[in-house]
Image (cartoon, rainbow, N blue to C red):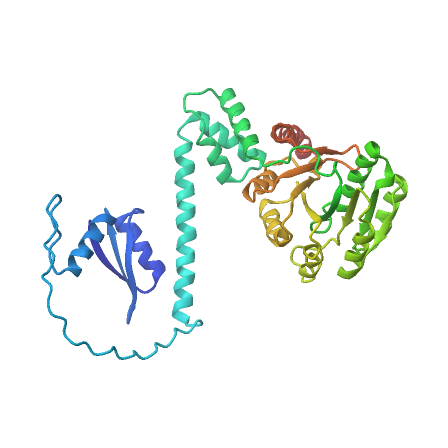
Length: 396
């Protein structure tokens, strides 16, 4: 093991010096502030067992015993000398949380961590591309909109000597197995469901599709709709219109207490669907709205996500609505995207089962049960359709 000390004006520069001289496999043993900046001690060919052995030997004030040597004899017992009670040590003053140096060090360490993660991902990507079959899988999944981490995980499972066609089929099969999905129709047996999600994702239309789907099989007498959306202009009117067309009653609940009381009155209905207010995931009023859902134990949340959104935005939505513990996710607007892999990647990342997908405005024709193998085939079809339309778009 080779140990070297580096001095630099800041941590970022010190880490760069370590990386340039000792390579990415170097291990930082210690760091401290100095009058001129920072001092970092780094090592290559780091052996944790050897370090621990040396530390134990130092504490015994003797050299490390050779491998296979008998243990040292136990010390002879001696008469115990009177010991004075320990004096209490003065309380150490806690380090200020707003210390400028500490904040700067944390920032630099966070930056270095992000840099190392990016470098590790890049190296993993390059290693996979050595194999033509794995490279083809990476290209396909990235075109479908899959997040790079998922694409690399699937590509790593592909054999190097398989041809491109078999590699693609195997990759789609692995992708389908990774997608969490519910078995059967989650609303078919009834219950109370609240559709939550940001504004403009299609919650109201999805509720109408679910209600009409249920009414076709069981009749409209056992269905009730509830709206808590008093914010958007025309939101209640839209749900009332759907209610009249399907033949089901619609109720309003503008407060948490009113929602709880309304649902209590509707307990005899087999299926109750609640249309929550559409708010941005960054709206300050969102927490209060989500508290309404959390306060009712028998209300089952379904998170509605648009399939045509960016992965980072979808990830932010999931994190903001996670407090209500969504039972499943409904993916909408499949007809408006050529990269279905983005929304599916988010569902896999957060292990959110996909219950339904929607691909149009027709009620209830454009809602379908989510089946993983059909979803990956649909992702391939959507991307192929988008690529066929690209030349016409450019020509225009």
